[in-house]
Length: 377
Ligand code: PLP
Image 1 (tube, rainbow, N blue to C red):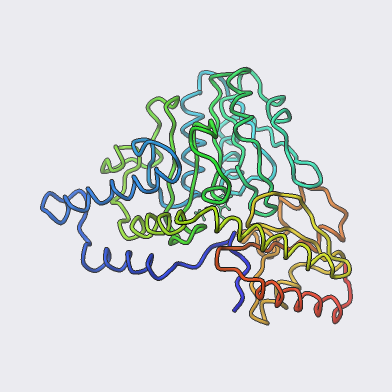
Image 2 (image 1 turned 90 degrees about the vertical axis):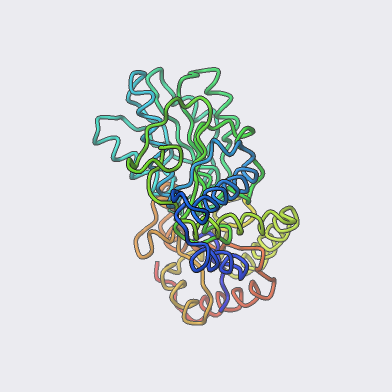
């Protein structure tokens, strides 16, 4: 199998699975238990928190484990709106956010909030000015993703943070960094965001674990889950210790020689772009600079047929966000591309393990698809 869908999820290295297995079978204590196995696990959870916080460049006190990126996005949006409920009921976000953010914003609309959804340009880019122009005195929250999961565009979070501080300092800033964490250089401080969402399964960790950074400007963050008081009473629920073990181990492995891994992914992306655009009718959709995501269109050939055909040959790529398989992607729709271009959009995404041979196999299969099938769009 050739796996070119690392933005959907990533393989778990053996060391990560081993770390999880040991916790599931031998070190299974509940961190709230008051005997040594529980007390040791409590210390261990703090050590894992430290590992993830170091990679995010933040104080461990400000990092809270969650069940996934989706939970982090929902929590951040609700907590920000709660803190600023007296400031106003306006949210600024983009039309190309992950549905975890979009649906959380739609839920806020049902609570009486007004949401501005900013459209990117035809290549998926957004400027800080565009975001800041939409901010009003009653804007409670700005939520802009760090890296677009379908296009690979990197958005100017630090510039937005600086502009907000000047224009409307009480407005809180959330960034969904699920595709940015350990892919593009940033720290919690350098981003300037008040909330940062990350997820384990995009970096070689297991599914079902993530974290939310909550910065110092957020006073008494409102919990999403009330209960037994875990995570400093801000996120109740018995700690998913095996997932945390896997998340921390994945972070540890990924941060080893991270610069080399990112350079490798960027090289693979450049090679893939060069080889694929040599196929007739194949063109790049965005100039996004994230090293692991490449969006292209085989203009005229329906993307779902491409995904199915390559899938049947053991090559895994995506027709857009994995959450939207089979339906037209809202991200591609926001680019307002001609129908034949939009209908042919595919996403390839890479990991440290991806090789040029993987790309060569994909290029061959795509060329064969192009030559053997008639355009339908
Ligand atoms: N945000 C972005 C940008 C994503 O790419 C994803 C996953 O595809 C999520 C949020 C959701 O993360 P999770 O799958 O951990 O809920």
